[in-house]
Length: 447
Image 1 (cartoon, rainbow, N blue to C red):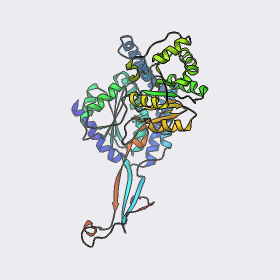
Image 2 (spheres, rainbow, N blue to C red):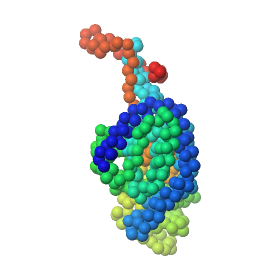
Image 3 (spheres, one colour):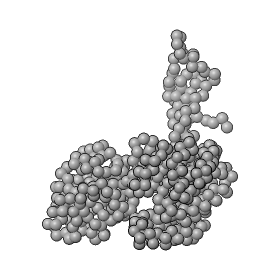
């Protein structure tokens, strides 16, 4: 098993060099072939997904799988349509490979170019989400990165069907190198992938916070991802309440299993008496369980809200991924910011306010990868951000942050073009000076 995984990674490393140098036309041709192949094989893919769903129902009955994980596993017509359109959207994006990022003239005839290039080999390890396969495969192809996928066993039939359909479609384009994309399927493969830092350049884990934390703690490979999505909405004193009702509801129930759904609602004390009872009734009518701090509990009780639950300390640090929401009353935007930075996961947080200075403070001081002003947290998504599709959401502060599209799969190299220039001429007594002049000149390959 170890040798098989190492062989796949070695093949992917070799193929990544070739993939980094194929034409935009070839990549777009392969992407269209992939989109068409999905459309032609929809029945086969849904049959495979149904096998996984049937097996998962038994796991739910034995409390071995959560309802949230089941929702992520299930392919719907809408999800399938998004998969197909996502691939075609990636084809429309500008090719990120070979772009000149900066040009510096060091001296006459000696020019330094900073040029974008693929990272190399990407390892994608994910749970339950079969739609990850076409999303990331299309982004990695367009960005010129070889990829090794390892999906969860609960989605093994769906993953295999999607991967085979897409890989076969790629083979219809001669320029796509063999060995650039692999699917690993055994649990042991994960442990082996984590050891292969000589072949794999970046790991992207997608799944539960415990799962992502495990990956981060057990590899020397760089990891792009987030361990949890503990997101907040803060309703300020100046908030338009009708807007706040709608945004807070959408941020929770539009897809509660998503990492960008809010888990805590913070309400300014001066608006809570009006806002909290109505918002509570709206949530309860939509099946949301509410967990109140002391102040909000007493306010809701006095307003005649039934079925009240008190929050405990761990609620503020919990990602529910379910129709559960913690509620807290705060006395200022500063208190809201302090709570978010202490208990949040630096993912996505929302302010509902009409006060520009308050909004500026919130945006500047909330240490999260996405901050929403009078808009739903659910917009924090690569597709919605115009990236074609999404590799994942990163709360890292280096390389890439927030919903990550192809830019998260790119790095750069320096190309210095001269004509026999020597460092000794620029050192010591009588050294020639460097010009260090920035220009707009683009690097052009010789062929």
